[in-house]
Picture (cartoon, rainbow, N blue to C red):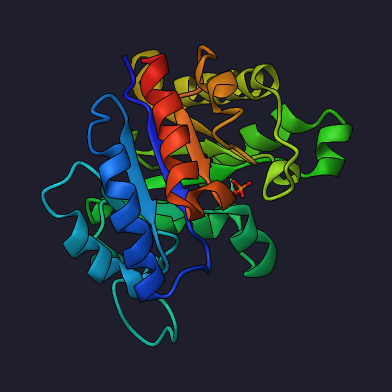
Amino acid sequence: MRTPIVAGNWKMNKTVEEARELVSELLPLVKDMQAVTTVLCPPAPALLPIAAMLEGTDVELGAQNMHWEANGAYTGELAPAMVKEFGKYVILGHSERRAYFGETDESVNKKILAAQANGLIPIVCVGESLEENKASQTAEIVSGQIKAGLAGVSADLVIAYEPIWAIGTGLAATGEMANDTIKVIRAVLAELFGEEKAQEIRILYGGSVKGSNAAEFFSQSDIDGALVGGAALQADGFAAIAAAAQNEV
Ligand code: PEP
């Protein structure tokens, strides 16, 4: 039995004051959802204040990115130990980082290794472009990203399957399409870690998930929650998705 995860990726949104406001609206809405793990990933400046607000709750905190090195001359970067001071999770390899900041499977691999070495749980994002999808290359692309990104890492991670064409577009995949690709991912995880471990790893769907379509994903056999962008910026939007996950357990 895999406990579902609903994680909110706030991206570059919310000042500390706005973040505090969102969390104070959200906490009463999700506090009784024991069957689902909720994770908030605010921008870096909000990590410390939000960590203080989440103390004593079951809501977890994560960062949106980090560097693989322990410290040094990397202007603008966050080290694994800095994330670990406040958070338990870290999103790695998001398609926006791959597209705009030159991240590759190789750099994602270094980051996963560093996250795990520091006791963080990486949420590793994979997904195909619209062109790749149209050319029926989805399975090949995500399998390649998983094999290259996860070389030498342990099974203590979460995967997020996020078709790039579905992110922020309002064009979500169907539950069935997402489930088919997630089954392919789980089969690759079984090759890497063995069948038993592969059955334990949470694989999330991400891409235009909202309260109104969440149940379609969570009712599928292999989808273990969601990584949520836009809908995570409103307390009721995020809570509706978490409630849909809670209802499917
Ligand atoms: C994301 O960026 O991870 C994401 C899934 O965004 P959205 O929910 O807005 O499509």
